[in-house]
Image 1 (cartoon, helix red, strand yellow):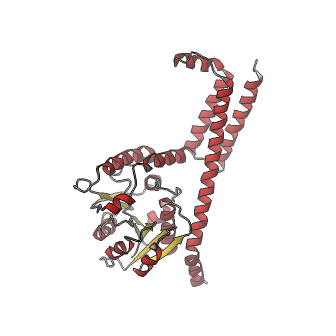
Image 2: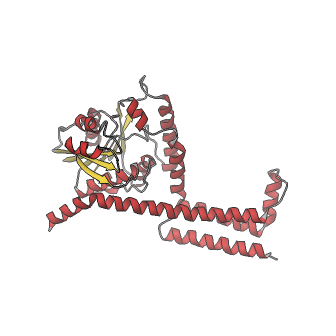
Image 3: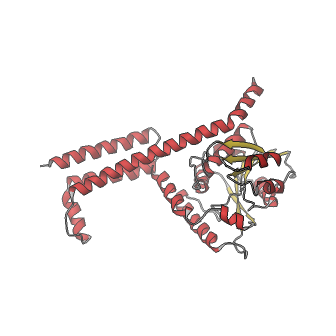
Length: 117
Length: 226
């Protein structure tokens, strides 16, 4: 039986996964990006659904304590937000560069347009 | 056949005139050589000095970085239908005769892209730059799938096919590696020629710094996984 926090996290992670797939389909995320982010979120889903795995890994790593749900959920959320923020900033920077380029080349393009007309 | 020599420049008023004067104006088999300086938002007199020295100039109203400038240069070469493009640094690091070597290599070796590989065995070569360049070459190989002996060289030549297919996306210094990803993806033929780099206190100061390396690597990795 799944606990409430597991259900919330799984729903959120599937949402994050769907956003990555949509971004890939939209051409914003590369194939490598799709593989990286979807693997990350898929692993997180497995860890949420089978928490023993994290406990086993924690024991194997010598941490000794099981997953702290709040900290782990926060890390997943932060990962996702950083990913979104990164894409957002890169898009804005790219847009600014494109505007700057268009302004720089404006005279050249209008000169060529006059030549051809 | 007409050739464009493209120079990205950011606050280079000290060297830009000397660089433009050192460039070749006549090369056998080439009908026309134009020089284009793209001023990347400089706050000094770079643009005016470049214009007075006879170069065509374009101005970025805001500083966008090396990748942003190189893309503008490529775009200009496409609009004006150049047969060949050579990019070179504005800090006086490259010699005019090496640009001739790059152009001749594209014609004679029948390659699409030629990289000017800087000789690092001279006594003036800064050791730290040699190490950074070597690490950058290895990383470029792993991240972009192609090995070159000088991934960070600013002296590169492109034929018409390369001008038309290379699509630069990055804005910063990581463009130096991105170009090799484009070469690999578009199955372009890469050649290399040995060139001499002139190391002055100014060019050492203006080139890539050790502190840039983590940022460049981080941006390259993020671009791969985005």
